[in-house]
Image 1 (cartoon, rainbow, N blue to C red):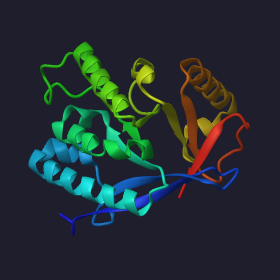
Image 2 (image 1 turned 30 degrees about the horizontal axis):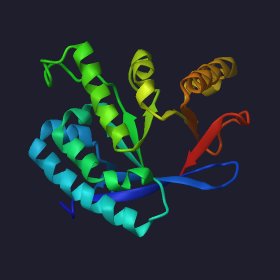
Image 3 (image 1 turned 90 degrees about the horizontal axis):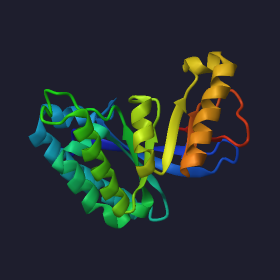
Length: 218
């Protein structure tokens, strides 16, 4: 396991000030491909359980090496259905003030995987999971470009930050009117719901108004 999987740290910084904001902890397979841990837990739950144990040990090492640093751990909504994922986060709750849980993907699990969950049951189940993460004092972020928009709106009361990745290949950059409307909507929604709104950009991306909180990754 230790030879197959490794962790890579990716910096997120404020391009205006140059200040390092957070470090993302990225699990990789043989240092080549970013590990899709959700697919691992679906295809091989035994291996997923072993991976989670290794992942927890490595995260603990990194946090102890950087006691003043804040970290990002990406987790798909679908992983919250699995006991191993919740045990990982429960075991790391002593470090929760240093960790952002960044939620990815669609919140609806496929019928073949969880046939007994209706759409309403699924939303209620995930709200319960998010409430537990809040109880453990994690900072919870959600990507708004993944999953249906209404799901993002549904889960806003349980999160601390909305995040949009606006890289140079984004089609929104080709239409400044649509871009301005998009940013205005989500900035207003975040303000209304008292959550942060962050845009991840490339260094070469277009300039943004000062009131838009932007970050770069490297």
